[in-house]
Length: 291
Length: 202
Image (tube, rainbow over all chains, first blue to last red; front, side, top):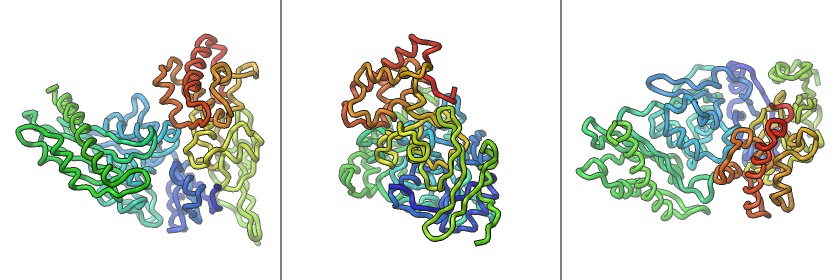
């Protein structure tokens, strides 16, 4: 249970990192927090020829930037930093709430938010948040940079839309719209385990305090996070989250695995939609001064 | 084989005291590149030569002979190998030693009291019977030491949350929770001198 041998680069600048990645192409993996990659190496489930360790890049990659529109998180920002009191990431309550569900505090001290996106585990929390908020990931290579929107970024289980030679340098999460509220909930067998099912849900109210839209992103119910528009179920004269739950259940196709059956996952989709919907709606009303 | 200048480990030059960042490139089949790094462990600088794939847990145990850190699952689940990296708990089995070159590490051995005897967390575990076989204990002691430094007055619920990432197969956790609360008590009553000593990281 030790990593296989690999060539090792530890660049000090982004340019050097991109050069190393360009040279090694698909033989290379990027090491950031390593909380998913190193277990895979230890168990010999991955054997990259070259590791490019970006932990010395600091600077731009270690920053959280907030403006009126969005929060941009650099590739070296570790989960724990998003949860610190006074963190600029507080501008995104949904991101903070989801991050508290990522593994254990010890893992969050080392793992990075962007690394979690790039790892693209269908049971991971942050990909669902990026998808729901309509965010994007910035990819850099020796040829330039591009931003890939979340709905194109998650390609399959553990597969993100990075080409060989590309480095994810930051992720951008748009700030929530006015008169909106959100909630993140998941069910796992033990605290800190991967979620059997999780949901990130956002409700937006119109000027009269009625539900204008409701959308949710589900994790662990498919090969990638699944976005479902619940608006039709909750914009009638009475808001019925049971209806929204049933709508969501009809839109997901979970699989059986050793942790849970597909039927149980579908059941959880209904339960979590109802619970998260109620919480998000209450928060939206609070944000609209209509509590 | 013609020696060629190595440009890959420039980072080590920047962080290693004495600038001893050389790479022994090895030769022949079955050899691999070796990197000279320095870890500051419990306040003591240790220069050490490792292959890039050496886990921090193995570096501590095999290269530095600091066997207080225990290796359980070796994939980040059990928490036995937890050490403090610049004061923060991390899994040493999920870190490459070469990645943390130049940084400060605190292990179980560094959680002792100012007089060299048991530290408050260690003493609390002994008093409250917070261990049986003791295999998981180093991970708990490091985790709890860092936790109490930030939360000197934890509730029982806080204590349970703090140890959520550490597995123990003997105790059933009840006495470990009690140990956390007792350690907090010991640290409060001994302030400021009895504060858990985290060597090299204050």
